[in-house]
Length: 63
Image (cartoon, rainbow, N blue to C red; front, side):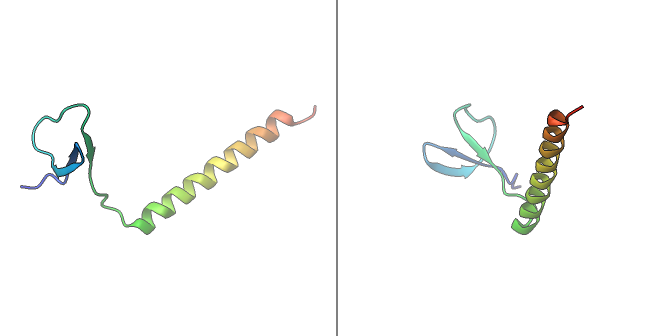
């Protein structure tokens, strides 16, 4: 049965089975499409930019 997790050790990529050394790079394919990931990242970026602008405006507001 495939776990869907892969490991890169010394430049060789194989399916991860069992305990892996700490220097191994583990990765797994996303279940989301690239457009879904892009859309989520864009929404998060817009939300964070708005938060930064709001905080900056609050910090520079004159009393």
